[in-house]
Length: 212
Image 1 (cartoon, one colour):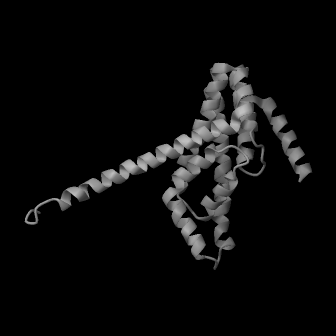
Image 2 (tube, one colour):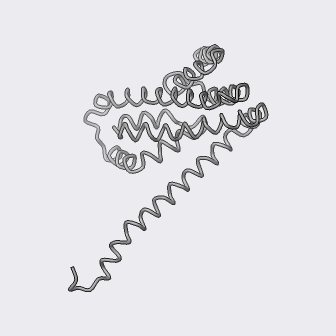
Image 3 (cartoon, helix red, strand yellow):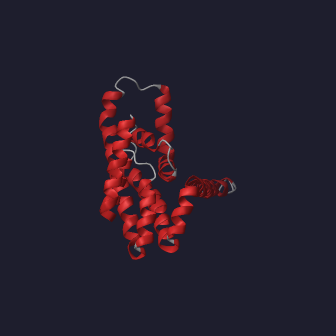
């Protein structure tokens, strides 16, 4: 295991030499088979601080690579689910499927914002195995990764080396603040949507019995 980690670290260091293209490759590998935790985040900051005029391109490269890597994991889990769970449709699995169907966008969005060592790949595999909507899967990841890498690119372009030092010291805290904001926004949206859908029913029940 230590050997694999050291080789992964060397590969990541090698890819950093190729700027935006290397960033795309690192993000793809980190979201698929080769864990490189935090390397793409730091590289987005570093490259954006060195070349502020290209910050949006670096955010786009990191987002694209990450989403493509996520889709690879999703596709593998989706294709292998029939063999993995043949004859094992337990009640717990059915409940997990139902819960993920109701909350898939919010779950994937939050997972894409959480810092390592959050079990991001486990969420990707579960989404694929439970055959959630591939479209909503992609949209949630695009939104989440765009927020994450876009924020880092902006900070790098705006504050330079100071942003790199701050993220290294406060990466977990900053990520959790964003996640908390997303959760609150999601709950508020659902509450408002629930009130809006309940309003017509209240109005109908107050109508006179003889009226249509």
